[in-house]
Length: 250
Ligand code: 13P
Image 1: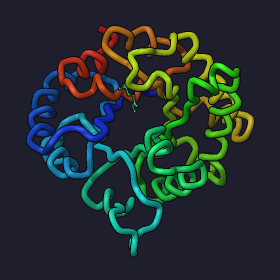
Image 2: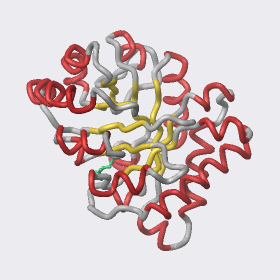
Image 3: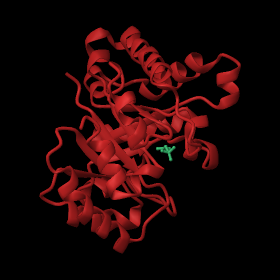
């Protein structure tokens, strides 16, 4: 049985004092869940968040990293740096980074390899634009992104990689993919993984859905057989709302 992983992506939101207050509020609300609870916070919130989340079931992640260990890369943060302070998860290749910061399938692949080598748990994002969807290219785009992201990984590494299917037209728009559409897209991603790495590996890979997930639609989405939880943006900024997503079975 694959675990459901419910991860918040705060994007560029919350100062350290707000992060601390949020986590203090969230702790009692999610303490009984069997789902994995992750908060991917801005770099400046990482240390504070790790301290407050210590000895709780809340895991802390970053939203990006560089693939080199160190060197002349002004403004970048390495996987080793994240690992050294106790960060467990890292988002790689979010569509906003692909769109605004020139991330490519190649840099996503380099980052993924490095994250796995250092022992971070990567959440790799794939997803199509509205234009690609309307021209019937969704499956082609997301299977290609998946294949290129995973290129050169061992079976064990693929099994440790979390994929988030985030259709770009559903991010921050209030438009959610229907549970059936999201499930069938994710099924195709799993199918692609199975073609390259075998059915056993594919069956073990956690694949989330992201794009306007909220407490009102979480149950329908996360009850689908191929959807293993979610990557949540806007709705992860409110502790009560996020806890209702984590506790979606109730
Ligand atoms: P929203 O939940 O705000 O649509 O954002 C989704 C997302 O981009 C999570 O990474």
